[in-house]
Image (tube, rainbow, N blue to C red; front, side, top):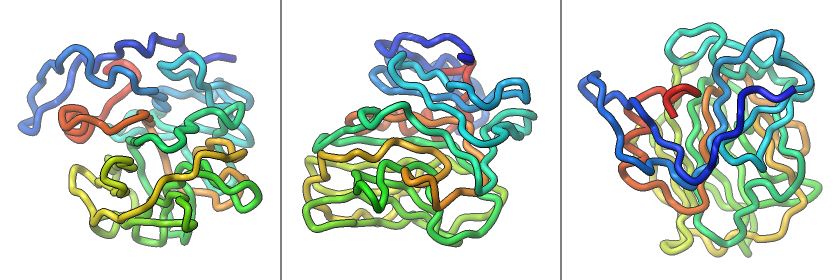
Length: 250
């Protein structure tokens, strides 16, 4: 079963972004153009196991394995997010999805953490068996973004401890020009970490809710995932941080 219709990746536009004052402001054309956007809101009990979550890039789907994926979203809608319970996950169809090599790349995710757990993956393209490129992890009350360079795993922390049950806007980025990685939480940037060139070869498959090995299961919810080969513009970061993006507004 396919949920929704795939849109062209050439020019998705956020049509209604709330400004910091809570008012409505139209974003400029081309915002998030070139990004792959996977909305995980507006799910229902009839859309489960197996089901593909269609992104704006018709070549990217995430298949639902093992369990219910529905829950309240950041604005209180029910259902409105993919809910993970330490047993279910979403996984791409093959290892080419989000395999960015040595290029800069960024991920934006609307996420909520329900339980304090150590070393649990929100999204991952890494495993003990196959190695990989990167993963975004919860470490008890903190967040860490990892990449693999020529020296092995390197990581950086989020700017502050997380609050359980609170929805967050999180951006993870690898800047191949500055050779650093960083995490932003609700627009606040953590301390960047210097890294080398990120690994280009991996058989690990992109996974949401667990590691690519289908372990390190996450407990919480995700309502939106945006991936970009390159760095988000400041306008894109502001649009992401100032509103709760949904299937109908992006």
